[in-house]
Length: 164
Image (cartoon, rainbow, N blue to C red; front, side):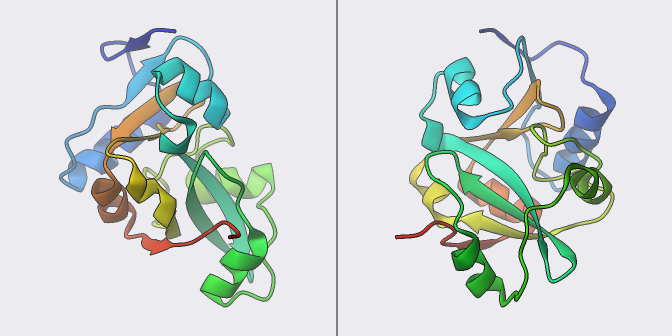
């Protein structure tokens, strides 16, 4: 799988690139030849560990969108996250809710570039990797970030998001 740094970016990825630049983060959104909707697909395309993939999951915490950036190496535990944010209800957002909150489709949700900032949790397991890869606004785009950059651009709170 090839990764291009010169291909034209889709509009949603341009919004991500602009948000990164506005935050002072020097990271370029890259276009993949094939879709990377899952952590396994992204890791295979990028030649990295699946744990270095920063999955973007949108939940609805007591009626408000919540972005959780989680390592691709494990499953999100809704009870753990609900306890962390003090939510009594925490369903996964429906596709329309994800698009409303982020302007992006499931499988391509970036950590930034949304219509408004989202409350964000960042999986503490992501700190184990020197370089992370997050979606870049579409299922065909990715952006490399350090854990520190991910925390900075999202204003996210480091948190355990998986059981154990």
